[in-house]
Length: 117
Image (tube, rainbow, N blue to C red; front, side, top):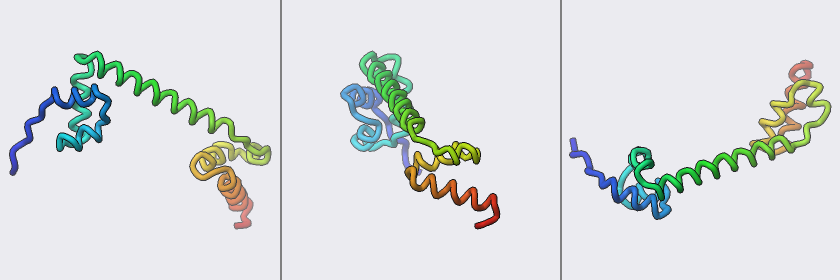
């Protein structure tokens, strides 16, 4: 069994403060992304620059989530889909495959319920 690699945590934090991603830092230092993430979590309080970047990243992720939800809610759901109580199926399918696929999916579900399929 090989010896465990000694990790220079200061080097990890320095690369993260410069703006490197976990993947970039891991590749440069020959570590796993998980190891870089654990070191980052341990040192996020001690490094103001890194903490600031971490908070900005989290805010950007929240904003991205809001944009996705706005796009999902902007999808026009046909009345017949609402009447058939398939709105959530329509939105889920539209999110991943587009509105045309969602319409086909809902028609297929209705056909199965009616026994036509």
